[in-house]
Amino acid sequence: MAIQTSLHPLSRADGSATYASPNGCSVLAAVNGPVEVQRRDELPEEAHIEVNVRPYDGVGQVKERHLEVIIANTLRDVVHLEMFPRQMVQLTIQVLKVPVDDKAIGRTNPQAESYLPMLPWLLNAACLALIDAAIPMRCTFTSTIVALMSKTSTRDHPTIAELNAAKSLHVLTFSSKDEVLLAESEGRFSMDEWDAIEEKAKIICLGSPDAMIEKGEEDKSLQQHMRSVIAEKVTVDERWRNG
Amino acid sequence: MPREAELSNIERTFILEALAQNIRLDGRARDDFRNLDVSFGDDYGACAVQLGKTKVNTRISAEVTKPFEERKFDGIFTITTELSPLASPAFETGRQTEQEVIVSRILEKAIRRSNAIDTESLCIIAGAKCWSIRADVHVLDYDGGLVDASCISIIAALQHFRRPDVSIDGENVTIYSLAEREPVPLSLMHHPICITFSFYHGGETVLLDATLHEEQARDGEMIVTMNRHGELCQIAKLGGVSVDALILLGCMNMTVTKVKDITELISTKLREDATHRDVGGLIAELSAQNDR
Image 1 (cartoon, one colour):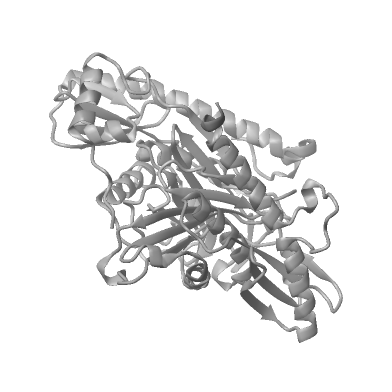
Image 2 (cartoon, helix red, strand yellow; image 1 turned 45 degrees about the vertical axis):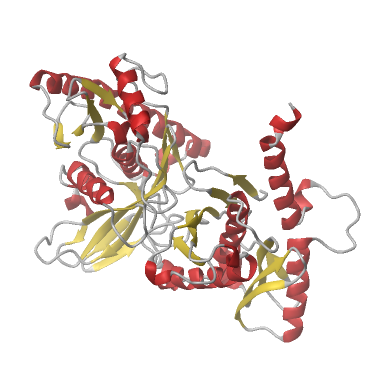
């Protein structure tokens, strides 16, 4: 199963996107902006960025608030907020699907689970939704999760069983300009291991630097995938010019 | 925070004059529903409903808790409807709009208080352990007909949901995971469906399944909840316009047929989903449930 994305699935939001990861997660992000801001959030020189993460079941609690802060901080580095002083960019992300755990008994407490497995998909969906809403950004970004299974083996897009067995989990976000925007880790690992993981995540997100060889659909980097989704949308939207 | 854009006078007059000539903006007849699509997710109790442009996802989950002190033999069933800015920038998180209150109260009345779920069947050990079933309604896209779409999605999701099987041995309760034992469906008493009527021209014109623009131009509305046997569960008439009793009776007759159609559609979709899941025809063998 490959990554599945769609742009502008919603009719009312300014921009929206869905992102389904190969390991069975699916999220829907919607951006409204620039819109009117509440008085207490108003900033005199830049736009306030509001992020809202809505879980699959139940209402958002500590875990979701934590994710919101991480996402908002990442976006603050990317979005040209200074272009909309005293306004707001509002991002809402709804989790539509989580991987099914056959061994779970009833509803396990989602608050007790790690926040990392969901984070990269939220960020990727957010990026696509921001582009769809035509919010000016310095660069685009892609994010992924890598699980360290043992000293030498790592897994991208880990399944539930792999997540539980992993020594450590790492979420990395790269800008289209090759910079690391976010690095969140959990578990035990050495510096060397982290370097290897960064290398691997970079290849997943941006593609390997020496990859001039033609690759199949499956091996596309996240960035290439995102580009092709947007290119497709632009071709459809701009059809009237060529008509 | 942004407000919902109001209809301009020109738009309003246009809609009303077109309706007087028996024309709706999208070309439907007055008693036509928009395209209704019901689909189910990979796990039990996840249902997506699309009614025209309105999209509602419902997710049912179950956990074991202690029952309320005053209701020792009953399980717990809750519905949460939280409207988010996904559906419209006018919906704020954390603050309830008037509409949100209306939607959640109507759904509460239509589904919970009409005893659609047999809460006594959710009891595991009286006064100590029971199932708490929770329905989370996520409104993703909003183009009118919120109550109708949410109700359909909750009812469909409840029928689709399976809770883990339990066995009781004295005071000990064992809960089996999905891999160990085939999960059991909820016991539902009936399947109430909400139908919203919109009134125009002082109650003379009646529309079914109004879009957002049509909702904004209406004088009043009436939400009728009925099951397929024609049993009335709830009527809510909002908006000040007074409507002729004969017209209301006509609405009731219309509800009967519409509810039958919708219930039929839901059960067709459920059957499709069941055959899709039933790989190798094993479900019947795995199930420990008796035919009723």
